[in-house]
Image (cartoon, rainbow, N blue to C red):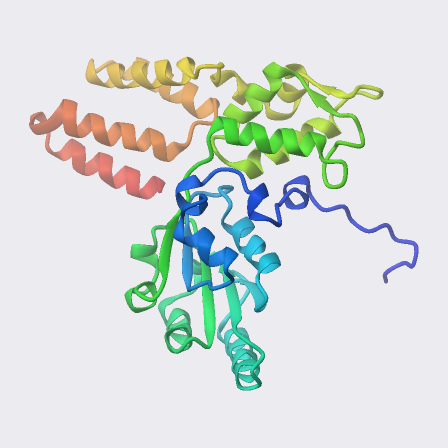
Length: 317
């Protein structure tokens, strides 16, 4: 039973810091820069059906929320993980009713749209075709494999890339200075070294960076307002150690890993593999390096090596 005196739950920092204006959106200049078609469509409130495709934490959902704040049309957001055909039919029926009443368009945002099977995607097709709904999809998976071709042909695919370290730092600095949504009113600061480590460790994912900042703030000793490397290590552990300011360590370990495989030194290859995994390296990145080694260094000496490496990479993905 809910209490009248229950305190409202505070939203996570990553959710609180989502921008509501394009001017506050960081990165993705190619996709939503000043001269991009998408930016012009948003600013003129003449959006067409689009699909945001990119890694986690690059701004897909945030862009949809920016559109929600800027559009004069009805905006409905659902998640494909928890929604199905009955919910789709209900929102389409409501969109048709609004359209018949001259109330304008309905924009439907479907997060994780690749989770819909082909039959569920087919439900959307005629209504995207006739303009009953303007569809915005978001996916981390390759849309050319996961989205039905007829539906995909009616949408503009917008590719979002990993954010740069400088972009991540801008987002973190805004979180530290924002008095309404961030830590501006609390006086929380981050040392220059810790800020660099945070930006590097995030790997282009703004959500990871903000979540780690929030965890570090929670772990601050009583009376302390400064997040240092020691505080970050207490949260992220040894994973922070794989980064330095120029990223040399990261590439040195990868290079040593490949040279060990090239030299048929199994023990050394396993050693560097373990160091990368312990440091939090993306397993898909490691798998790609093994595929490259199998193709370029092993080659025709053992053609089966590429088959096995490629199968392992697909399994990892």
